Every structure is written in C-alpha cells, then in structure tokens.
Length: 239
Image 1 (cartoon, rainbow, N blue to C red):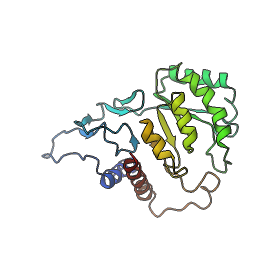
Image 2: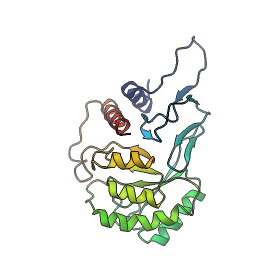
Image 3: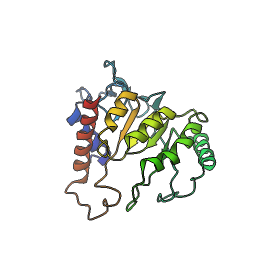
C-alpha cells in the first residue's frame, strides 16, 4: 500500500512538474532525482538555470540550497531542532525566553546532531493568540544574531510576517519557515525571493485560534497534498 508521505510527494510531482522516476525494465534499480536548483520544490532555493538532477536514493544524497549553505540528506531524515523563544508554546513555552538560555539550548542541539535549528517567536499551538511584529522581533533577533555565529548548521526563522523574515535574514537566517505557506502576509513571497533564502511551506487549516474548530477532511492525504502543490506553484511563480 502506498504510504501517506509517498502519496503526498506523488501529488506534488503531478501538480508542479518535478522530475519523475524514468520508466525502466522490470527489476532495474534506478535512482530518482530532483533538480537541486529547481525553484518548484516545496523548499525553494535560489532561482538558477536548471542543472543535471542529483540522484536521490535511500543511501544517496539530496542537497537543498539555502541562502548561506546547503542541507544535505544522505539517506536519513534531517532533524530540525525547535527553539521557541515564546512564553506559550505547547512544548517548551517560557523555557527559553532569556536570550542567553536560548543560545545555549541552540548550541546544545547543534552539538547533539541537529541538522538545522528553527527559531520561533510566536506560538502556533491550537488556541494561541497572535503577537505583534515588534514583539516577535524583540524575542527572535537577539537570539538569531548570536546563534548563527555560534553554530555551523543553517538557522531558520519560524514566522508568517514578512518584516520579521526580512530582519531575520539580515541577522543571518538562511531559511524561512512559514506555517501559513505564504498566505498570511502578501509581502512574504517577495521577501523570500529577493533574499534567495530557502522557504518551508506548511499546511494549516485556518489560524492557530481556529484550526481545531471542527477540522474535517474527506481525504486528508489528497487534500493536504493538493494544498501544498498549489502553494509550491505559487511560490515558484513568485520567484
């Protein structure tokens, strides 16, 4: 039976035209491939002329270009260390509000083997209330500025606000992790495209305050896959 993850990837490929595995005789072992510099993937990198596809196998590498580095997957899942500098996140809310403690935790996660670190200044747990741009910047920028100088792995900013993303990229972030998939702020796509940072597109029904209000899907894999396909295509067209 096809797994949910494989079905989501199939839907994305179908919608936005990522390369498929070529047809081969029965029994042939052929690596699939993704264009490293193709901006049509769910994590968008720099917009460059397409180059030869890099083989992707259970033990082969997949490189994802970021602003200042590349994430390389060598057959194992990449681990994102979550660093919430918020008072109300569901897992560690309030634990790392102090910039010094947050910095130490980020360095610890890098030492423990995290492949990237995601810094967030606004909780997106169910029922969370939004915070102002000023407050989000106050929480995240001091941590980002020091963290990027202290670790050798990419750092992402978890935000739906274009101004926070812009300031975070200036502070050293290489990836924008937008849980709204570029829907919350009409300027976000332009900020990411101009900066050449990578972007992570997430699925969320409604907003954190409403997303648990009678959520319903006829086919969750198909509907989430179709949503991500549309948002990836939107991101591609935005540059």
